[in-house]
Image 1 (cartoon, rainbow, N blue to C red):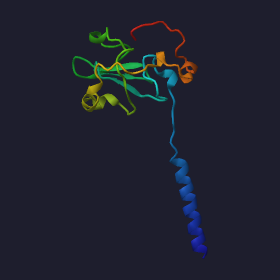
Image 2 (image 1 turned 135 degrees about the vertical axis):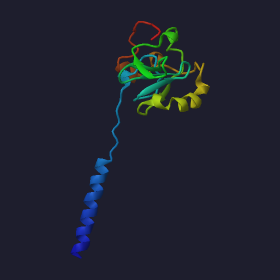
Image 3 (image 1 turned 30 degrees about the horizontal axis):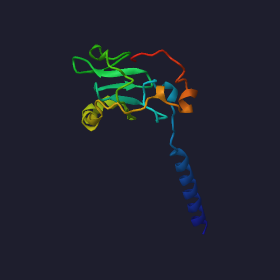
Image 4 (image 1 turned 90 degrees about the vertical axis):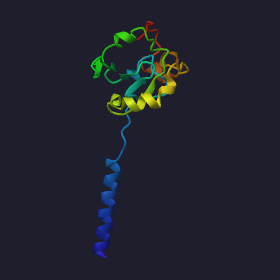
Length: 145
């Protein structure tokens, strides 16, 4: 009987420990998302821009694009070839996976239907209080990016 009670106690403590260590951590980065980002996301790692096959890494506020040598590079702005692209109009696909650009061939096919799609509501035009609380919609200067 003592063995059964001891075994039950061990099982209880092990299961209690596993439950606490398996908790999911939710991070919110609404304030880091640019005004041209789409509404509806509390956390974003990357935006994929299907029109120009470029990524934007929200945590570092950097664009990720292929350079002429075919290597993925981070930059503060869009590549020169896309300097006239209007980030406020183009569709942004939210991708929350590490190094999203490494899966570019999959994304290019999967999200091809979003090219030239202008239906997305952006943070700048949102009336949701959570965006106003986090520094958006405060009359910032207009611009392309």
